[in-house]
Length: 380
Image (cartoon, rainbow, N blue to C red; front, side, top):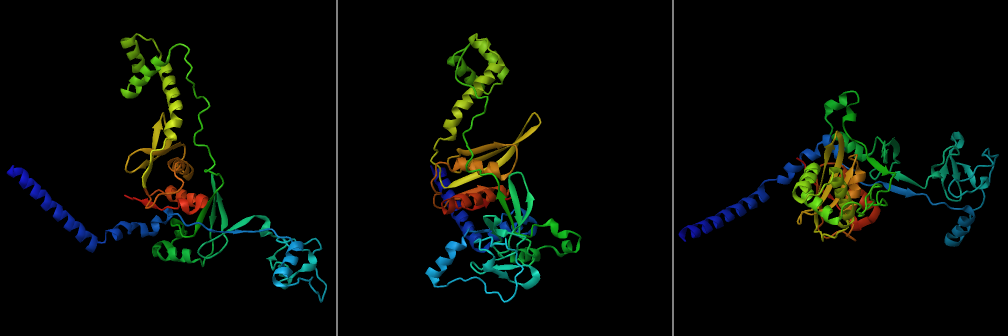
């Protein structure tokens, strides 16, 4: 009895010492600064995801409706241009924004070719029409138009090429000066603002699509009892296909091929998949995610898992032939399918791979503040 009392007192003493050490570490040791020292390095800039750009939508107007509106709203009456000399603007030229004809147009910068519309005050060039597209992308740091740089399989890369952009200058100041002296030394770093515009809508794709060769529960030679025996030996005992067929032969006297066992397993998985994928696990407010690859017969395939941190249940998964952001979005969609909005104090923990912040950005772009969350990245 004295030994038990002594151990209890010793445990309480250890608990006090641990609490004191935690208090000392939190007050005087800057652990947060140590953790993020590497992430501030310009070498890790390639793994960071920039925020969303400014999207400027171009609304089509018609000068026949816009002129009466200006007169009604502001008392401003728009009259055709009173010219003092001959105008060499083409008779077929019209404003690309409000379709105002030549009488409402005049040259804005003399012989350099820019034309200004008197109705909507739009400056344009007859050779180039920026209003042919419905919107344009602007850099959120300098408001400069983004340039179309690269075409990838699922997205287009837009880049801010403004040399005076504050985001670019800030990243340039952190670069090692030795690399700047080398030829193309800047190419080792990600310095400019970059935005990826996806051409595929991953939020409209079906998550429950079954393969074309999915089997049905129609038994021609054996019944459902034989199928249950195959699943018991194969799944519960972890036997191979041939050992499962041999066990049925030796124990139950049932002659069955290993291919038929494989067909039963595939049929069961196809039938169970919708129930497992759509089951509501009543998730908490902390999700964890990770990805890895599996290699079968020399073919590499990637698999994504999203789990509830408290219940350890797999709430989202995806198998893909690439490690892009598309499969990551599909796995997140499966994890969030029973949520109308994210819970309070929500945390999403993943590794340092840049696909997770990019997928989170796309969720905010699609659903707004209800699904706005940051990725807690655990590196190392």
